[in-house]
Image (cartoon, rainbow, N blue to C red; front, side, top):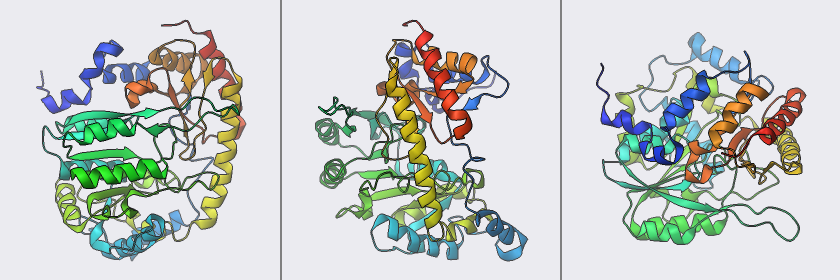
Length: 408
């Protein structure tokens, strides 16, 4: 039998077993290999056939592969590309371009997250993480031996007008946890899985706590350009004193449907990027070399593309929210960013029972809420960026199957 290191054991999040009955990985494998139709609709990610990458993506890649691009770039990425990224990203973050030394290109944004964590954490460090938040973050933190303190997200009651309020962080819980001396805070913004965008009070409180208690923050802003209805987005790195203690994760994989090119970007102080480069040099070496050249055009050349995509995604979001909230078995807050919704199941059925039933009887794959933390209980994550010709009927099947399930 192959000996399994303790770090690998921690990836299964054994501390969640008591409430779930099995480890997270055991439950996920049931979903992966369980019964279901031959080709279910996978609502865990966007349909990139319906929503393809910008037209310039493939020609740019082909030109690089045909001789215009280096095969072996520096570990942190092609310098000319990083110069362009630094300039273009500054317009998004609202802070002056720090130059190529403050940018590292990685194999996907998840690669950027792992590399940043490896460059910052030591075993036993305390890390603050919202609940719920991106499903892979706590696993990585546990892998590195960190102690994780979840900061609850507060879900406001319905307003007098019937509109469900947007969630915020519990700022008192944040302050209490910050007083314990964390090494790091990690949060996705817009929040994955809820699509929430934090207001100035929340982002300002994070910045204030980080400065006073001297900890670093990783802000996963992968979806920061996928924001609806002119919502104001507050970038943590733009707050006073935060550029030198913030790692901002970005990338073109979701908004521009460039997941298959495996590209991520991290913007951080030069000294930290140097360490991240050391980590990447002994893991993936570099982001895919030819694909890197797409990042020189990313942001700069996709303005009209982004405008069209936002209109299409918002229409799908609105349709999905309306249909879910018209049912008696689920309810959901409207997402202000991302392509996700995080509906609550009102029938009392367990997350796993719902996910298994949807795969088997509705032909739809979803992310069960337990993947995102304790606050995900009785919820599921749906990616609504699907082909309109099939999504409406899929929602009908989802609601019908959820309504047929008995309480746990």
